[in-house]
Amino acid sequence: MAPAKRGIIFLRPTTLTKVDSAKERELDRAAARAHAASVSFRASEKFRKSKSKAQASTHPGILTQEEYTRFRYRTRKGDASPLSHLLEGNSDPFDALPVNITPRVNEALSFFRTHYLPATYGRESLQARSSAEELEYQAFINCMHDECSALAFVFLQTVNLSQVKSMSASRKMSLDQHELALKTKSFAVLRERIGQKLAKENEDRTILRSAILLYSSAVVRGDYIEATMHGKSLARMLYEREWESPTTAKEQAFVGHMIWTDAHFAQRFMKAPHLDATWALAKLKPVMEPLDKMLSSLEGMFTAGMDECLDTEPVRSAFIRDRFAGWLWTIESLPKGVDSEAAGFWVIATIHLVQGEMVSYALDVDERLRKCTTEGQCDDATECVWLTQQSIALGLVFAVWLFSAPSVGGYKIMWTGPVILSRLRKSLSKAMTLAYTIGSRSDKPDPTATSKYDNAYLWILSKVAQSEHTFAKPNSNPWKGWGNRNFAAVAQRMQLTEWETVHERLKKFLFHDGLEPRASSWVERTIRLNASDPSS
Image (cartoon, rainbow, N blue to C red; front, top):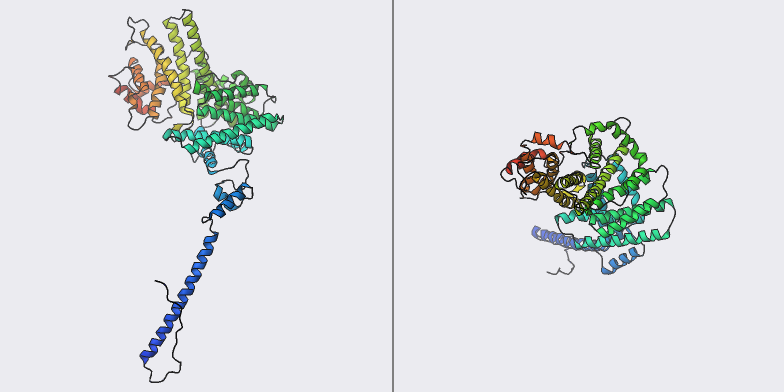
């Protein structure tokens, strides 16, 4: 209903006659009050509407198309305002960094800081950073202050983030497009920097850092051709570079990062690392030598109790170094005089050097067996020995990956496990078949036969079985997996049924019961459930 027009009300004179009744006077007063209320309401309503209109015209969420276009144009021209950052989604409104920190970029950086880094160093959310983790975090901050390294770093963390998301659901198209855009820009800026051929130390470091980050990205994505290109180029750049003598901490960090990436390249593609380990150790001598001397003095502590089948080099030395690294990583306090940063660097560098060395050894065994078979000099016993040592080497690679690779949301970032396992399963199956048929009249393995390598087979299969439990899908039956069935079969050959006796055998190699579910919770059940089905 339309409001009534504003009218005029006429009241009687104030000098009323005595004959006016009380009723008439009350009616006059009521009419006056009603008129005043009507005028007041219309005035306040008009004020409210005008105020709302004024507020709406300045509210950032209510913009005309012309205003929106004008703000976008001003932002592109560099004439930014606080409102333009809201419109564009910039998380770095003060432009403190050389790259645009969009919400998607910020998500990747937050993922690195709050998930990836703690997972890499085994830190709980409320724990303080270790010295090694703090060093890597500071390196991340330094990366973000140069466009070349910042783009490469954001690209790597976006790739890492997409790997986690792809484990639970298919990658979103927008994330793929974002990856491609970052990759294209990272390559372009790096090519420009290399083309300038600046001899400045800082520029040299920026190029190295960016190239290593792009190498890591290619490895994570599983791009063998691109990863090989980066790896070979980086190795050549490192060999030809002029180094300080002795090397500085920053130079050592470059070598350490290259070792880390090279090891994952070797595991991902079952290829030899690009960087020569002897050269790398020479450059790392200032930080590695004190811990190497400590290992030499304590070696008896880590060789005691080792299984007798660990008698072949370089496998034996690899187990000694990894056992020492595990001890350094898990003890509550380091021995007096041992620097915590140096110890952390030694552990990470040594573990990944060993990973690359064991992959190279496995490839060397393949070549030896091929040559031996071609020349007709390879009998079953010799082949069994070589295949078993190869399986032990690959078992060590798989065990270290299983325990140390960063895991976010239940998914490994460096998903190299299936590649290692596929190669390990092939070698181990053939080695066990030979071990349990040698001396038998049948071509099939004797279910009661034993071998000097029983402990080794039991240890390797325990790691495979552990992975089947750790990564079991809902409603699956890991106790009937390949690793669990063969683990139970070897345990039955050795007449082992209890966890304590199994544990004594596993400790002869490299064992840490830190993965969920704990081995102590599934070993006996696996043996019991597979007692009537020892097939492999």
